[in-house]
Image (cartoon, rainbow, N blue to C red):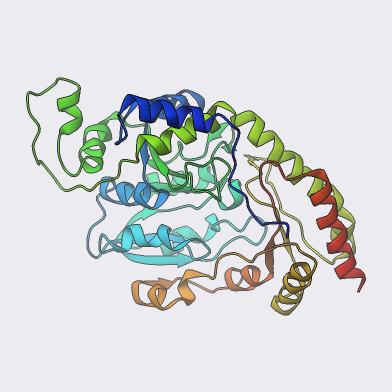
Length: 376
Protein backbone atom coordinates (compact mmCIF):
# COMPACT_ATOMS: atom_id res chain seq x y z
CA UNK A 1 0.00 0.00 0.00
CA UNK A 2 1.26 3.46 -0.90
CA UNK A 3 0.35 5.56 2.14
CA UNK A 4 -1.37 8.89 1.80
CA UNK A 5 1.11 10.45 4.21
CA UNK A 6 4.35 9.48 5.96
CA UNK A 7 5.71 11.88 8.56
CA UNK A 8 9.01 13.40 7.41
CA UNK A 9 12.26 12.17 8.95
CA UNK A 10 15.65 13.47 7.81
CA UNK A 11 17.98 11.57 10.15
CA UNK A 12 19.26 14.25 12.54
CA UNK A 13 16.18 14.28 14.76
CA UNK A 14 17.51 11.46 16.99
CA UNK A 15 20.73 13.35 17.66
CA UNK A 16 18.92 16.49 18.73
CA UNK A 17 16.42 14.64 20.89
CA UNK A 18 19.36 12.94 22.61
CA UNK A 19 20.97 16.33 23.19
CA UNK A 20 17.75 17.62 24.76
CA UNK A 21 17.66 14.60 27.06
CA UNK A 22 21.29 15.08 28.06
CA UNK A 23 20.59 18.70 28.98
CA UNK A 24 17.81 17.48 31.31
CA UNK A 25 15.71 20.37 30.05
CA UNK A 26 12.65 18.63 28.63
CA UNK A 27 9.86 21.09 29.39
CA UNK A 28 8.89 24.08 27.29
CA UNK A 29 11.11 26.97 26.20
CA UNK A 30 14.32 24.95 26.26
CA UNK A 31 17.28 25.24 23.91
CA UNK A 32 15.57 23.75 20.86
CA UNK A 33 12.33 25.65 21.39
CA UNK A 34 14.34 28.87 21.26
CA UNK A 35 16.33 27.71 18.21
CA UNK A 36 13.14 26.93 16.29
CA UNK A 37 11.52 30.25 17.19
CA UNK A 38 14.58 32.26 16.18
CA UNK A 39 14.85 30.37 12.87
CA UNK A 40 11.27 31.25 11.97
CA UNK A 41 11.61 34.86 13.08
CA UNK A 42 14.54 35.31 10.72
CA UNK A 43 13.22 33.19 7.87
CA UNK A 44 9.73 34.71 7.83
CA UNK A 45 10.71 38.24 8.90
CA UNK A 46 8.28 38.32 11.80
CA UNK A 47 8.68 40.01 15.17
CA UNK A 48 7.54 37.16 17.41
CA UNK A 49 7.11 33.39 17.16
CA UNK A 50 5.92 31.21 20.03
CA UNK A 51 5.93 27.45 19.60
CA UNK A 52 2.76 25.80 20.92
CA UNK A 53 1.54 22.27 21.51
CA UNK A 54 -0.67 22.45 18.40
CA UNK A 55 -2.06 24.83 15.82
CA UNK A 56 -5.35 24.48 17.71
CA UNK A 57 -3.67 26.01 20.75
CA UNK A 58 -2.09 28.72 18.61
CA UNK A 59 -5.57 29.64 17.37
CA UNK A 60 -6.88 29.63 20.95
CA UNK A 61 -4.11 32.03 21.95
CA UNK A 62 -4.95 34.23 18.97
CA UNK A 63 -8.62 34.32 19.97
CA UNK A 64 -7.65 35.49 23.46
CA UNK A 65 -5.18 38.08 22.18
CA UNK A 66 -7.82 39.34 19.74
CA UNK A 67 -10.08 39.88 22.78
CA UNK A 68 -12.92 37.73 21.43
CA UNK A 69 -15.84 37.75 23.87
CA UNK A 70 -19.29 36.28 24.34
CA UNK A 71 -21.63 37.41 21.56
CA UNK A 72 -18.92 38.47 19.12
CA UNK A 73 -19.07 37.24 15.52
CA UNK A 74 -16.13 35.81 13.62
CA UNK A 75 -16.15 35.36 9.83
CA UNK A 76 -14.46 32.36 8.24
CA UNK A 77 -14.96 29.73 5.54
CA UNK A 78 -16.93 26.59 6.34
CA UNK A 79 -14.44 24.50 4.37
CA UNK A 80 -11.80 24.12 7.09
CA UNK A 81 -10.81 21.98 10.07
CA UNK A 82 -12.86 22.20 13.26
CA UNK A 83 -10.08 23.93 15.20
CA UNK A 84 -10.51 27.08 13.11
CA UNK A 85 -13.97 27.52 14.59
CA UNK A 86 -13.45 25.85 17.99
CA UNK A 87 -10.87 28.39 19.11
CA UNK A 88 -13.42 31.20 18.82
CA UNK A 89 -16.46 29.23 19.95
CA UNK A 90 -14.64 28.59 23.24
CA UNK A 91 -14.54 32.34 23.76
CA UNK A 92 -18.32 32.56 23.27
CA UNK A 93 -18.25 33.82 19.69
CA UNK A 94 -20.74 32.95 17.00
CA UNK A 95 -19.23 31.77 13.73
CA UNK A 96 -20.39 33.32 10.46
CA UNK A 97 -19.50 31.09 7.52
CA UNK A 98 -19.22 32.47 3.99
CA UNK A 99 -18.78 30.67 0.69
CA UNK A 100 -15.43 29.78 -0.86
CA UNK A 101 -13.86 30.46 -4.22
CA UNK A 102 -14.06 27.35 -6.41
CA UNK A 103 -10.60 27.97 -7.88
CA UNK A 104 -8.48 28.07 -4.70
CA UNK A 105 -10.94 26.62 -2.14
CA UNK A 106 -10.19 29.70 -0.01
CA UNK A 107 -12.70 32.12 1.49
CA UNK A 108 -14.31 34.31 -1.17
CA UNK A 109 -12.97 37.73 -0.24
CA UNK A 110 -15.76 39.40 -2.25
CA UNK A 111 -18.41 37.99 0.12
CA UNK A 112 -16.88 39.02 3.43
CA UNK A 113 -18.08 42.62 3.61
CA UNK A 114 -21.74 41.65 3.27
CA UNK A 115 -21.35 39.31 6.27
CA UNK A 116 -19.99 42.04 8.57
CA UNK A 117 -22.33 43.27 11.30
CA UNK A 118 -21.91 45.48 14.37
CA UNK A 119 -21.02 42.27 16.27
CA UNK A 120 -18.21 41.23 13.95
CA UNK A 121 -14.84 41.17 15.68
CA UNK A 122 -12.50 39.19 13.41
CA UNK A 123 -11.93 37.62 10.01
CA UNK A 124 -10.17 34.26 9.83
CA UNK A 125 -8.78 33.48 6.36
CA UNK A 126 -7.68 29.86 5.91
CA UNK A 127 -4.83 29.37 3.43
CA UNK A 128 -6.01 26.07 2.01
CA UNK A 129 -3.30 23.75 0.64
CA UNK A 130 -0.69 26.43 1.36
CA UNK A 131 -2.19 28.72 -1.29
CA UNK A 132 -2.67 32.28 -0.08
CA UNK A 133 -6.00 34.02 0.30
CA UNK A 134 -6.32 37.52 -1.19
CA UNK A 135 -4.83 39.22 1.87
CA UNK A 136 -4.85 42.77 0.45
CA UNK A 137 -8.62 42.71 0.15
CA UNK A 138 -9.12 41.02 3.53
CA UNK A 139 -6.77 43.35 5.40
CA UNK A 140 -8.34 46.41 3.77
CA UNK A 141 -11.78 45.31 4.99
CA UNK A 142 -10.40 44.66 8.46
CA UNK A 143 -8.90 48.15 8.59
CA UNK A 144 -12.10 49.77 7.36
CA UNK A 145 -14.28 48.01 9.94
CA UNK A 146 -11.70 47.84 12.75
CA UNK A 147 -11.50 44.04 12.78
CA UNK A 148 -8.73 41.64 13.72
CA UNK A 149 -7.31 39.25 11.12
CA UNK A 150 -6.25 35.82 12.35
CA UNK A 151 -4.57 33.78 9.63
CA UNK A 152 -5.12 30.04 9.87
CA UNK A 153 -1.87 29.09 8.15
CA UNK A 154 -1.90 25.51 9.44
CA UNK A 155 -1.05 24.37 5.91
CA UNK A 156 0.94 27.49 5.03
CA UNK A 157 4.45 26.94 6.41
CA UNK A 158 6.98 28.45 3.98
CA UNK A 159 4.26 29.66 1.60
CA UNK A 160 3.90 33.29 0.57
CA UNK A 161 1.56 36.08 -0.50
CA UNK A 162 3.29 38.72 -2.64
CA UNK A 163 6.57 37.80 -0.97
CA UNK A 164 5.20 37.86 2.59
CA UNK A 165 5.14 34.65 4.60
CA UNK A 166 1.66 33.33 5.33
CA UNK A 167 0.85 33.90 8.98
CA UNK A 168 2.77 37.20 9.18
CA UNK A 169 0.34 39.45 7.29
CA UNK A 170 -2.68 39.71 9.59
CA UNK A 171 -2.70 40.53 13.31
CA UNK A 172 -1.93 36.91 14.20
CA UNK A 173 -0.89 33.83 12.25
CA UNK A 174 -1.03 30.19 13.28
CA UNK A 175 1.10 27.34 11.93
CA UNK A 176 0.80 23.58 12.35
CA UNK A 177 3.58 21.05 12.82
CA UNK A 178 1.28 18.03 13.01
CA UNK A 179 2.71 14.88 11.45
CA UNK A 180 0.59 15.45 8.33
CA UNK A 181 2.24 18.81 7.62
CA UNK A 182 5.32 19.62 5.52
CA UNK A 183 7.51 19.81 8.63
CA UNK A 184 6.52 18.18 11.89
CA UNK A 185 7.20 17.83 15.58
CA UNK A 186 4.53 15.13 15.96
CA UNK A 187 1.96 17.44 17.50
CA UNK A 188 2.78 21.12 17.55
CA UNK A 189 2.21 24.57 16.17
CA UNK A 190 3.21 28.20 16.45
CA UNK A 191 1.61 31.61 16.81
CA UNK A 192 3.25 34.57 15.06
CA UNK A 193 2.63 38.30 15.20
CA UNK A 194 4.34 41.57 14.30
CA UNK A 195 3.06 43.99 16.97
CA UNK A 196 5.35 43.87 20.06
CA UNK A 197 2.45 45.14 22.16
CA UNK A 198 1.09 41.58 22.24
CA UNK A 199 4.29 39.95 23.49
CA UNK A 200 3.81 40.19 27.25
CA UNK A 201 0.17 39.13 27.05
CA UNK A 202 1.10 36.18 24.83
CA UNK A 203 3.80 35.07 27.27
CA UNK A 204 1.35 35.18 30.16
CA UNK A 205 -1.33 33.21 28.28
CA UNK A 206 1.22 30.59 27.24
CA UNK A 207 2.63 30.29 30.78
CA UNK A 208 -0.62 29.32 32.54
CA UNK A 209 -1.53 32.95 33.24
CA UNK A 210 1.71 33.73 35.09
CA UNK A 211 4.51 36.21 34.48
CA UNK A 212 7.04 33.35 34.60
CA UNK A 213 8.79 34.46 31.40
CA UNK A 214 9.69 37.78 33.02
CA UNK A 215 11.06 35.90 36.03
CA UNK A 216 13.33 33.75 33.85
CA UNK A 217 14.66 36.89 32.15
CA UNK A 218 15.48 38.36 35.57
CA UNK A 219 12.99 41.20 35.22
CA UNK A 220 11.16 40.28 38.45
CA UNK A 221 12.33 38.42 41.57
CA UNK A 222 9.36 36.03 41.69
CA UNK A 223 6.49 35.13 39.43
CA UNK A 224 2.80 34.91 40.17
CA UNK A 225 -0.64 34.36 38.64
CA UNK A 226 -1.60 37.57 36.86
CA UNK A 227 -4.22 36.68 34.21
CA UNK A 228 -6.03 33.94 32.32
CA UNK A 229 -3.84 31.35 30.63
CA UNK A 230 -3.16 27.71 29.96
CA UNK A 231 -0.27 25.33 29.27
CA UNK A 232 0.56 25.89 25.63
CA UNK A 233 4.30 25.14 25.76
CA UNK A 234 5.52 22.08 23.83
CA UNK A 235 8.22 19.83 25.24
CA UNK A 236 11.74 20.60 24.12
CA UNK A 237 11.86 16.98 22.87
CA UNK A 238 9.26 17.89 20.27
CA UNK A 239 11.15 21.05 19.40
CA UNK A 240 14.36 19.02 19.00
CA UNK A 241 12.65 16.89 16.36
CA UNK A 242 11.43 20.01 14.59
CA UNK A 243 14.88 21.60 14.69
CA UNK A 244 16.31 18.79 12.58
CA UNK A 245 13.61 19.42 10.02
CA UNK A 246 14.05 23.20 9.99
CA UNK A 247 17.73 22.67 9.21
CA UNK A 248 16.67 20.46 6.28
CA UNK A 249 13.72 22.64 5.29
CA UNK A 250 14.86 23.31 1.73
CA UNK A 251 15.49 19.60 1.12
CA UNK A 252 12.06 18.61 2.41
CA UNK A 253 10.29 21.35 0.48
CA UNK A 254 12.20 20.55 -2.71
CA UNK A 255 11.14 16.90 -2.52
CA UNK A 256 7.50 17.82 -2.03
CA UNK A 257 7.56 20.39 -4.82
CA UNK A 258 9.11 17.88 -7.17
CA UNK A 259 6.21 15.50 -6.60
CA UNK A 260 3.64 18.31 -6.88
CA UNK A 261 5.08 19.46 -10.20
CA UNK A 262 5.23 15.88 -11.46
CA UNK A 263 1.53 15.38 -10.72
CA UNK A 264 0.62 18.71 -12.31
CA UNK A 265 2.48 17.78 -15.49
CA UNK A 266 1.26 14.20 -15.66
CA UNK A 267 -2.41 15.06 -15.16
CA UNK A 268 -2.48 17.95 -17.63
CA UNK A 269 -3.91 15.66 -20.30
CA UNK A 270 -6.73 14.52 -18.02
CA UNK A 271 -7.49 18.15 -17.24
CA UNK A 272 -7.61 19.07 -20.94
CA UNK A 273 -10.06 16.23 -21.53
CA UNK A 274 -12.34 17.53 -18.76
CA UNK A 275 -11.99 14.41 -16.61
CA UNK A 276 -10.43 16.32 -13.71
CA UNK A 277 -9.62 19.82 -12.52
CA UNK A 278 -6.14 20.61 -11.19
CA UNK A 279 -5.12 22.95 -8.36
CA UNK A 280 -5.06 26.65 -9.25
CA UNK A 281 -2.28 28.93 -8.00
CA UNK A 282 -3.01 32.69 -8.28
CA UNK A 283 -0.23 34.99 -9.46
CA UNK A 284 0.05 36.54 -6.00
CA UNK A 285 0.71 33.19 -4.28
CA UNK A 286 3.80 31.04 -3.88
CA UNK A 287 2.58 27.71 -2.55
CA UNK A 288 4.50 25.12 -0.56
CA UNK A 289 3.35 21.83 -2.15
CA UNK A 290 1.41 20.98 0.98
CA UNK A 291 -1.07 18.89 -0.96
CA UNK A 292 -2.01 17.85 -4.44
CA UNK A 293 -5.67 17.29 -5.17
CA UNK A 294 -7.85 16.47 -8.11
CA UNK A 295 -11.44 17.56 -8.53
CA UNK A 296 -13.67 14.92 -10.08
CA UNK A 297 -17.10 15.21 -11.66
CA UNK A 298 -19.16 14.59 -8.52
CA UNK A 299 -19.37 12.73 -5.20
CA UNK A 300 -20.29 9.42 -6.80
CA UNK A 301 -17.29 9.55 -9.14
CA UNK A 302 -15.01 10.46 -6.26
CA UNK A 303 -16.22 7.51 -4.18
CA UNK A 304 -15.57 5.09 -7.04
CA UNK A 305 -12.17 6.73 -7.65
CA UNK A 306 -11.04 6.33 -4.03
CA UNK A 307 -12.27 2.72 -3.91
CA UNK A 308 -10.49 1.87 -7.17
CA UNK A 309 -7.18 3.31 -5.97
CA UNK A 310 -7.53 1.47 -2.67
CA UNK A 311 -7.95 -1.82 -4.57
CA UNK A 312 -4.74 -0.97 -6.42
CA UNK A 313 -2.87 -0.29 -3.19
CA UNK A 314 -2.96 3.50 -3.31
CA UNK A 315 -4.44 5.49 -0.43
CA UNK A 316 -6.21 8.66 -1.58
CA UNK A 317 -8.54 10.59 0.72
CA UNK A 318 -11.26 13.22 0.63
CA UNK A 319 -10.92 16.24 2.89
CA UNK A 320 -13.15 18.43 5.06
CA UNK A 321 -16.87 18.01 5.44
CA UNK A 322 -18.06 21.65 5.57
CA UNK A 323 -18.46 22.83 9.16
CA UNK A 324 -21.85 24.46 8.64
CA UNK A 325 -23.31 21.02 7.88
CA UNK A 326 -22.05 19.53 11.15
CA UNK A 327 -24.21 19.46 14.33
CA UNK A 328 -21.82 21.81 16.14
CA UNK A 329 -21.64 24.09 13.11
CA UNK A 330 -25.40 24.54 13.23
CA UNK A 331 -25.28 25.08 16.98
CA UNK A 332 -22.45 27.62 17.06
CA UNK A 333 -22.66 29.27 13.68
CA UNK A 334 -24.63 30.24 10.61
CA UNK A 335 -23.95 30.37 6.89
CA UNK A 336 -24.26 33.86 5.45
CA UNK A 337 -25.53 33.97 1.89
CA UNK A 338 -25.77 30.98 -0.43
CA UNK A 339 -23.67 27.84 -0.27
CA UNK A 340 -22.92 27.74 -3.99
CA UNK A 341 -19.45 26.20 -3.95
CA UNK A 342 -18.53 25.06 -0.43
CA UNK A 343 -20.47 21.78 -0.37
CA UNK A 344 -20.29 21.08 -4.10
CA UNK A 345 -16.55 21.55 -4.39
CA UNK A 346 -15.81 19.68 -1.15
CA UNK A 347 -17.63 16.63 -2.53
CA UNK A 348 -15.48 16.59 -5.68
CA UNK A 349 -12.04 16.98 -4.14
CA UNK A 350 -9.67 14.07 -3.53
CA UNK A 351 -6.12 14.29 -2.16
CA UNK A 352 -3.29 12.17 -3.57
CA UNK A 353 -0.27 10.80 -1.68
CA UNK A 354 2.33 13.53 -1.24
CA UNK A 355 5.13 13.40 1.31
CA UNK A 356 8.87 13.86 1.68
CA UNK A 357 10.65 10.92 0.10
CA UNK A 358 7.79 9.62 -2.07
CA UNK A 359 9.70 7.56 -4.64
CA UNK A 360 9.63 8.15 -8.38
CA UNK A 361 8.49 4.56 -8.82
CA UNK A 362 5.53 4.99 -6.45
CA UNK A 363 4.34 8.27 -7.92
CA UNK A 364 4.57 6.83 -11.46
CA UNK A 365 2.45 3.91 -10.30
CA UNK A 366 -0.11 6.33 -8.82
CA UNK A 367 -0.39 8.18 -12.13
CA UNK A 368 -0.72 4.88 -14.02
CA UNK A 369 -3.58 3.72 -11.77
CA UNK A 370 -5.43 7.02 -12.16
CA UNK A 371 -5.24 6.90 -15.93
CA UNK A 372 -6.48 3.30 -15.82
CA UNK A 373 -9.50 4.42 -13.77
CA UNK A 374 -10.53 6.95 -16.37
CA UNK A 375 -9.87 4.58 -19.26
CA UNK A 376 -12.32 2.14 -17.69
